[in-house]
Every structure is written in C-alpha cells, then in structure tokens.
Length: 378
Ligand code: PLP
Image (cartoon, rainbow, N blue to C red):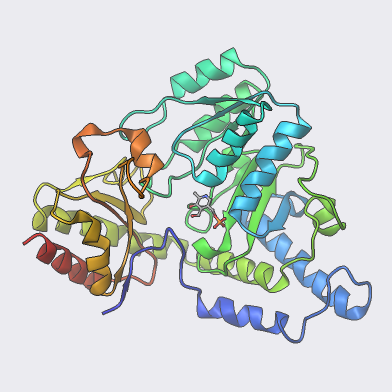
C-alpha cells in the first residue's frame, strides 16, 4: 500500500485538471497580451477563468488577480497595504504561516511597521477581546489572520474577526490557503478585504495562485512591468496554470458537501482508532474538536518513543507519506513555530505527526497506517 496523508502540504492533481491544461501548452500557446488572434483567444480564456473564480467567491472579476503562489499573494497584499495606506500598526498572530509571518517581521525589522500579536491559549484559540483592545489602541491598522491553520487545523472565527475589523476600520487580510476549495467562501458575506489561495492545495497545479482584493482597497503594485492583471501583477501569465486552477476550483465546489462528509468521516475514524490503539495519545490545537478545526487535518501528539527522530522515516519505509512537527528548539531541527507558540507544556517533547486527508484517501489506508504506527509502539 502507498499512502499519502500529506494533503495540507500539497495534493495530487485531478486528472481532469491535467486534461484541461494540456491545450494551453500546445494549441493555445499565444501570449495573452498579443493583439493578434493567437493572443486574443488566450486572453478570452483567462478572462473567462477570472469570471468563474470570481463567481465562486462572490467577488467581482476585477477583484481577482492570478499569481504564482500564495506566498506571492500574501507578500503582495501585506506589503502593498502597508505602503499604499501608510499603515504603521499591523495585528497578526504567531500561528500564521511563514508566508505571512516572515513578511511582517521583515517589515517590522526595517522600521516600517510595529507588529502586534493577538494573544491565544494553548489550543491556539485567538483572544478576540485582546484583538478588540489592540484595535482600540492602534487606529488605522492592517489585520492579518489566517482562516485555518495549516499545522494544527484550527479554524478561526473569520466572520467575527472581519466584523471587528470593520468596526475599527482596519484592513482585513486572510490567508485562506487551507480553506479555499475546501469550504464555500463568500468574500462579501465574510467581510474580508483581501485573501489568497494556491491551486496545489485543492488538486490543481503548483506554481499558480489567486488573490481576491476588494475593489475598495486601492493598492499599489508590488512590482512593476507590463499591464498584465490590470497592471497590478506584471509578468506574462501562467496560462495553463490559471486554467488548471480554475478547473480545480470548479471540481472542488461541484461536489463539496459529499467530499467534505467523506473526509470528515475519515478524520473522525482516525481519531477514534488512534485513541483505541495508541495509549496516551493527544491532539494539538483544536485538532480533535471537529467543529473548530479543518475536517481534513489531524495533528497528533504521540507518546514519547525511543528514536522518535526516526518515526517519520520508519513510516516512510511502510510507504506512508506524512508530515512531522515538533516543538523542539535546539539542534539542527528548529521545530514547528506553531507548536512552540502554543507552548502546551503537557505535550512538550512528544513526537508530533500531521495527517492531512483528501477525497482520494480511504478508511483502509487509515487502518493500515494505525496498524503500522502501533507496531512502532510495541
Ligand atoms: N499559507 C498557508 C496557510 C499554507 O499552508 C501555505 C503552503 O503550505 C502557504 C501559505 C504557501 O503557499 P504556496 O506554496 O502557494 O506559496
């Protein structure tokens, strides 16, 4: 058996997505900026894709920008908002992905902003009273809080956070990489000013992402060049990638409830079986809380074991692809900044693994995984 439980890192591409992209490497090879027929036909396809993506997020086509990845999207939005709106105070959390955290820390190091972190508990639940206090203290702020955490799976109360941002006229950016294509997102209902996604997290290709930026944002570009993406993101478009992203999103939303239910059932089963088969097991963040975490991620805190550094290697030998994560801060491995920030002392020094599922996983795979994991604890 070959088991892939690392879908939060990347997902296998849907064959229909691959198929949809192929003509854009051959027939539709024109540069969408060319004014002749070969260019115009590709331009039309990109604009059609933009409309489709916009519709699925309840945004306007003019609010959708294609990028190379979510890291680019986060960098662009955060840097542009700070520069365009002369923001001095940014509110975020230490549990963000490095694609947000590192940009903000660099901006702070350069003296462009002061960075304020919202407090959280050991489960990673953000303290919204503290967020309100920060918004009261610092006017004219940018708030960047992810929709769902990629390591422990926590879902943040995004609408509530957006509501607070609106109340205090703060710009609200959310890294929605782990939820776009997995939850129906309605940017208007959610009250988000800007969000980002990445196609390879929902069975699309790598190297293509998307940004939604509300038409009221009035941002300057991050870099300058041609007039692509209405001058906001210069550079010849990754046409096949854009088509693939759009197809992947269409497929993701076409049977969302069924896929969601199936994956949710796997997660529930995994938690139940782990509790039965591995003594003294625990879960990180809100991972075990089925309402407050992604239906696709389980972050597991395993009992201490001799040679815990070999755990992932041993699972790999059983053809199980899975991610690790540890809160250790010494030696070559710096560990997970998220687990370190959670500072859950009860789980300190325990090996951590993250299982993240997709619609392609099965109950049999979970049985196999637990059987092999249990063997390592014999
Ligand atoms: N944000 C989150 C929450 C992620 O999980 C990831 C990828 O792991 C990224 C950002 C970066 O995405 P990309 O690989 O498209 O740059």
